[in-house]
Image 1 (cartoon, rainbow, N blue to C red):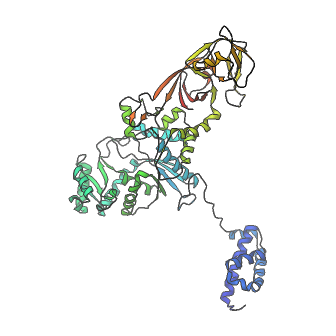
Image 2: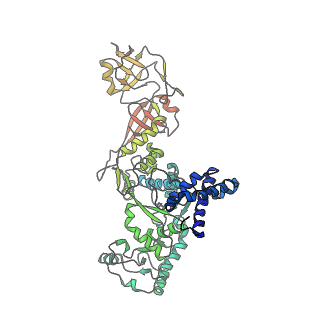
Image 3: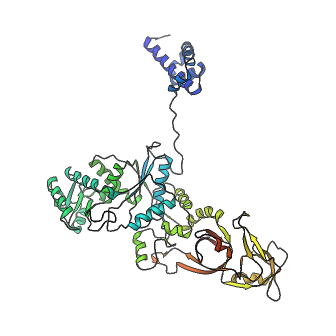
Length: 560
């Protein structure tokens, strides 16, 4: 072989052996043709000398095929894992089994549709990559947090189908967060500021540092001790030494710790200095092992601060991805809007069916499956989404329709006597199913909608599930021959019908104003099978819409 040196020849044989071993380990044996093709594909410099290397290939293949299969197993090439597939785009830098996400709600209210989006995205990515999901209550503002909200968050997320691998509170790590504050002071990256709020705001707007920022670490440690023990609320804050000239206002010496003299729902009076969200999230994400931190678009400008704090503390930096906020048109998600409704008595609680809280949606009959499908249908985008409620309705309709019991219901009833019909008619409770039929008594008077009465007086009409009728001279309804074009009318037996109040919720706002008529109750008469249904069953009232049974005398209208 030309230009053949012992080193070159050994290199060729090494390449042949590597290819032959991998092929035989994968398939049980190999052939000279397969090995030669792969060799020349990876070593184009040998193509003009294919005949010369053929003899070496034959020898190596013969040796490899004679090996014990157990010995060959060690040479099986590592299979590349296919990228995970799911409804969301792949995560840059993500490794199967290595992804850790977190959902960090503050327990200062009930979770709503916007929280659902964040929770579903974090849960879906953890599932896509076989990773871990952390629920971390961001409870570092004792003035706003209550035990009621901790419980509500857990209950509603469990209902939504979100499963967490770890559940913790930021307040669990208060000692660590105080240690990190002291470390930032020691490194000259934080200082205690005693300027009043107005002066601080003016300085930040003017991009001017205050005199407090010129203190050395020893002086700031002394102030930090007084802040934790002697200063009153509002007299001092711990600030991050950022960049007062930065065009990003969040970098202009933001607050890291403040004094809050309120009892914490879990820790009582143990602490009076509490970390800001910016410090807590940066430290907690790093020490909790989070690999991908998802934040709503409103926090996008704070990402620079998030990583700057981690760099100042030599902490591992998770990757940040930003997604849009989600709200429903004319349905407030902001606590700033919901709390006044409660305080003024416009709504009785966070589960009011007019609200987009998860408890309000659940009470209305919106299913967790529909919420998940709705959220994932929007994709991972940075464009804020204000969706009409009808979009969520359409997903819910596909979920509830197959399992909603069909019932007749009338409001504003008109009464008619019935002749020539069987005493009892049995109709399927579920569409297309003959199981658990419901019985309707046809032996006496029936009730129909007043709006349908003219159709009965003017000609032939079809009583749904019963047959066609025509009005006799005495006003009674008599059976007649079927007519396919006859209008269909729903009805209920007069004698055994049940009085039910159907609560109908509309968006609580018209523009900026609260709509006093956004919650109404319709007095209905419902067929007796309603009483046999368990509370919270889904119902389709024929020709009216879907509803959720709330009690023996009340149902909540869901949607058409």
